[in-house]
Length: 211
Ligand SMILES: C[S@@+](CC[C@H](N)C(=O)[O-])C[C@H]1O[C@@H](n2cnc3c(N)ncnc32)[C@H](O)[C@@H]1O
Figure 1 (tube, rainbow, N blue to C red):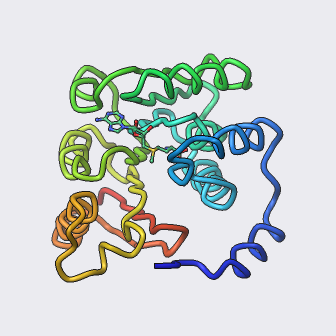
Figure 2: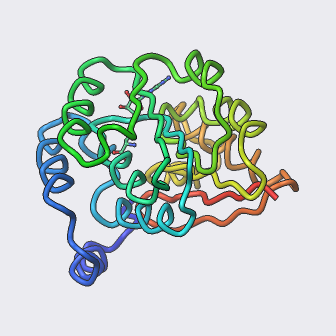
């Protein structure tokens, strides 16, 4: 399912601030990756940056680093003493992301953890201001449950791909990722201890506030 009209996408990109040089390089580098579509990209990256600049978080957790694009967008809003922890399962992607982080002005603020988020999150002794969930889709409910008690009151969770290319809107999707996202969306819908809005940006972004 085409979620965004390409002309609308192009127009929105033209009227938004351009990517900085490093983000442009990461975006171009990642286009050769077989799963290039996983990258947040220009518009969503800019929205992540803007949200982070509004929140001014001291501690950010990102679950799913990939090549480091979204981490560098979110890092732009960190306080002076802020840190962003990001977790990546795959060694090759983690190595590449670390190279990009090292070349950025956020090198000392970004801590990259290599391994499975389910193992690593419980070892992080932090209270989060902002969490970005963007790893394996069947894991979303588990990640939400793991981070919620460590999320500050009025802290935010962002969860990506909540339309899952439109398949999450189907009645009985075959794909396990789409089913994982559907289950996550239902959990979020039913909770009354959070405030939430679905942003129809790219593949759908849940914006959740702990009330
Ligand atoms: C959608 S991509 C992340 C995209 C990135 N946030 C961005 O916007 O540029 C998902 C990433 O999560 C990683 N991943 C999958 N399962 C994971 C797990 N259990 N723990 C940590 N990372 C995982 C994948 O290897 C992949 O690089």
